[in-house]
Length: 117
Image (cartoon, rainbow, N blue to C red; front, side):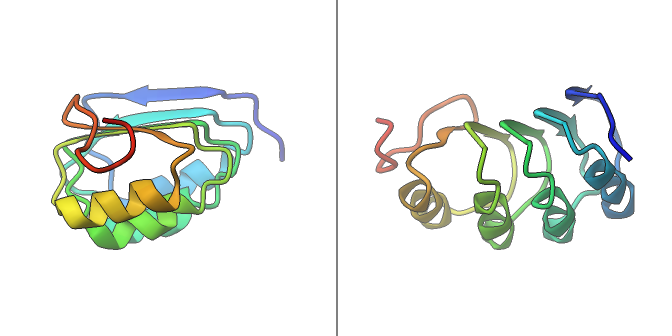
């Protein structure tokens, strides 16, 4: 089933990992922006299946470095904003070096050592 939704913006959401499995059905989705303290690294196994994503913006989502390889699988991703989270600087630098094609911001700033200084 094809869907036509291109943008999903949920800045005050309380999504769960299982709720995000539904995102995989949005096969034309280009922008996903959401907040949720309940979403964990596990959810990005589902999100990484949405290959149409160009923009991923996470607000207060407590991901760790373990989610970054899944995010890196998004071949069309152009922009990744992470506000909050539990990632390390080393993990984010590694992610940025693996995917220098992605415009990346952490807490509204470019990451030191990412190549986007």
